Length: 246
Image (tube, rainbow, N blue to C red):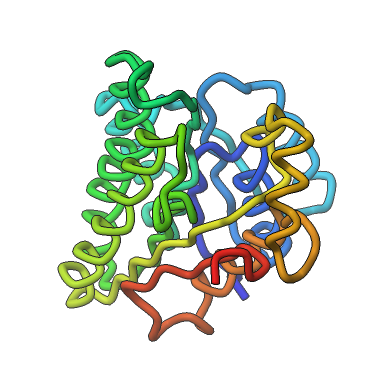
């Protein structure tokens, strides 16, 4: 489905990013695995993909740093001459009650979840504009759509990604670039590992499909939007939550 495509996945060393990178590689894309701190995990993923006879490379960059982003896209242009798909997956979730949330937590969350999405999209769209084609997929969250107590800053950052996605889709469509967002619900990743068992069970009881989602569930939707199957889908927010939110 992605034969010959160059795909960049940010925060791809684990979780949804890792599953997305692996699935894209299995569909014959050359996958660029962006990481910041988890170098060992990124190396493991690249090795796994290459052992399968597939194509992957890795690049370190802090997506909240414009200097890092500029250098990353310069490297992609030099090595590949093009970029077909950008998956803005990297994100952080640090929860606290509104009255206890300090500016450090606020600034860091916005810098990674929103500024990082903005910077990567800006540099990627410049490459894609010249190609007259491209796919950009941004990871939001059901929390960004519905909100949740104790997650005001995270919710705000992910809600902003939705507005950013819809505006970018309107602006970039003339260049053959689609821009969409995915809003995962409860997914089995490191972001939910500290949720108390009783809270997890309560959340699970509200999911019609009666299971917690997997990173692969989200990766399959990314694959659809990245491929020709999703060529006429743009400006959308696709919820992947097992029918929890309805």
